[in-house]
Length: 199
Image 1 (cartoon, helix red, strand yellow):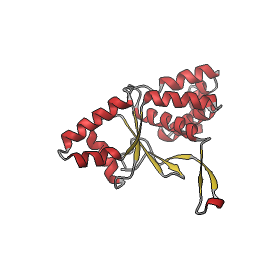
Image 2 (cartoon, rainbow, N blue to C red):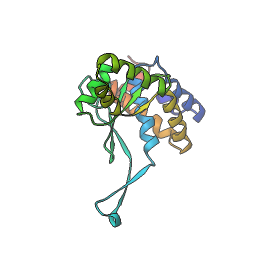
Image 3 (cartoon, rainbow, N blue to C red):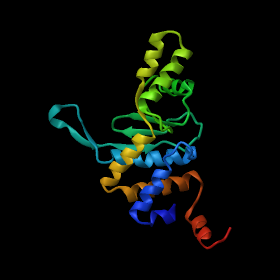
Image 4 (cartoon, helix red, strand yellow):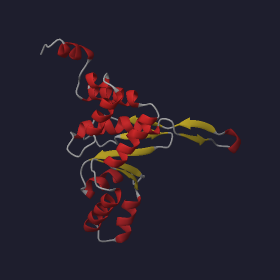
């Protein structure tokens, strides 16, 4: 990754796009998803305040809340100041989605799904799973209404290209490298030893 990050722009773009695939390691997919979404939202702003004449401009900031695949019951990303939650997953088992929804007391949540299927196809699959799980339509509707957004691989690719157009390719790659170091317990000393050919 470090070598690729120093390559020309087209090489870096191609490399990141290869990490957005259904067969990529789940931890890498989550890291790359985070880096892309962080810089996709980076320049977007909202206005908050308690009085109309005292609104404050606030940029959207995405935070990663823990290690990947930690199985700690946490939410993967949170956005400030909107309070949006994001959960990264590769399964279409509706019970997992409903568990995530229940643990935040049915607060709206966006799912980043490691799938190339269309958003409509993913929603349909989840809806069918919900109907199998619950026979009462009102319960199914309540859970489905908690899904704020579904972000699939094609959407991530589009958002990546938009972030690159805004000049954030280097930052995205640096974020991927940084988060990968944390995830795989690599420090700078390990990197230097690897470059020297030592074990």
